Length: 185
Image (cartoon, rainbow, N blue to C red; front, side, top):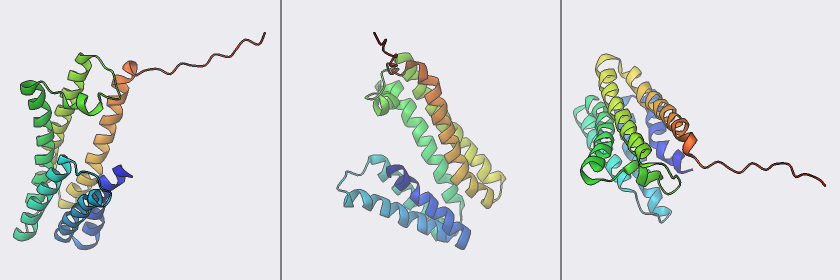
């Protein structure tokens, strides 16, 4: 359910974009993102910092998009978010010795430190590539192509990369004891 709520503003954006265009879709994205924050309050859960960051960027860049009637602001938001992710992963590990991927997944996985470093770096590179790819598509393709890339392409790329990560660390995952058939004597 949590994953659905995370993507609900994006789904709302896409549907409204198909019906009414980019500016109405941007307004709907801002409202749906605010409702997503409100859902944490209703469920009496703390709002994660990243949700505040997402909402802030959506409100600022979405507001600029609507005010100036220029979709370039909204297109930059995707690059800024992915660039922030990449930067935070690299800076926190390099300068503060905090591997955020390990902090996020470390309680449920016991991996060698070298593997945690590789995971952190690979996710940082992935986010940086998403940021660059978004800019390339935003400035070289139509708005329709960019919206489809934003909604389906980035989501699909993230899903594929997450699955690839699971395959990469599979050999380090704890294996369940297989039950051998008991010898009836």
